[in-house]
Length: 440
Ligand code: GDP
Ligand code: MG
View 1: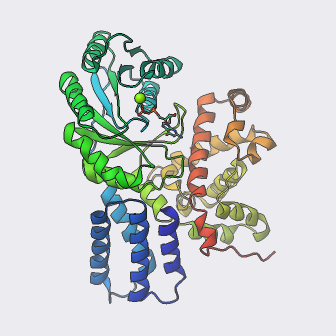
View 2 (view 1 turned 90 degrees about the vertical axis):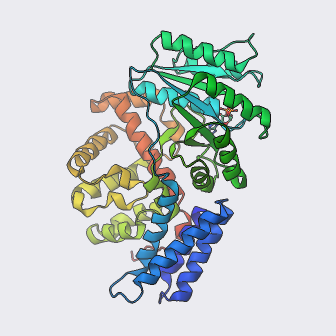
View 3 (view 1 turned 135 degrees about the horizontal axis):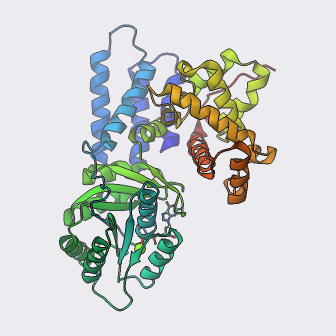
């Protein structure tokens, strides 16, 4: 999906004249890309109509940069689809909330339950996990193992075969124990079956969850809309979590799931580990899809201020989609040199999150702290693109060496990983023509 939308927009960027024909071709290619990514036909058609309508009112008005305008319109339309228009329920501390997870078998429910619990535990909640999956052999063992590792209390049974009873008992027990976030994991089936939906309805009726989260594998493709709608019809789905975004998923299912459930995506899963879990950000997701921030703007800016022989390697790396920590250090350095108003960071994919408007001063301080951390890293660490290299003992060494804490090192690495991932997704750019001058 990303490749094709970015490709379409890049073609637009390189056309000498942007006339109706070029615009139509671009919109058609975007339409094709979205359909291939299994976004529902109606959504795509509405999007194209909306963009055309806006463009029609703007023709003739002088001074419009049509190219950027179209890019912005596409981005806005994707945001509109992804923005369900209502915020999801957020659990309150010290007041017990029940959150029920639903989704097909294999979608990632059990894994995601623990991630969700762990995420909130780090932020001061007291979560607990209830295993109401009596369908799959070994379901309780899996949850137990995950929960133990993350040090989260759990409840389940090897004897009881009624998932509704387990759910009710578990919720009751943890309410008594003053747990403020009680998470109910449920079973799935390979297929959407009446029995599954009836079971979900009964568990929901008996435990009265404050929030039902629909978990969806990002690679299910075509089936996304119908699957999400089927769950929505049996239980009051209020939020969506998309899993396995670290794979080859096209991401289009997220748009369909939001449309089908009229609920926001709240998190995405980016790996099998408990901490591979990110808050979902509509704007940056849409930016990812549309060719992200402004990579060519970034290239221009860097070329303005940095001697050409010094930046070529960095820019080459960026265009190849391979970012090392050393590259990140350089980017931070440019950001400090050019000042926050240069907006240089926010031109990079994922950079808008690093540089929220109005918080520039705090961001500059944060960047300086990050650079101090990096000063304590070895050459090997700075030049590696292998995420597995950074183990706990290395992190401890870096924290000690820079007078900070391991959690600061982790945070910095997470930020790096996010940016590196997003850049890796833009590799298509190099093929489609964004070039850097090679005048050495
Ligand atoms: P459930 O049947 O819905 O409970 O799904 P599970 O939680 O058992 O997950 C099914 C498989 O998907 C397991 O092998 C998980 O490790 C894997 N998985 C879950 N979430 C992610 C993710 O975000 N990324 C990757 N790569 N794997 C995931
Ligand atoms: Mg499970």
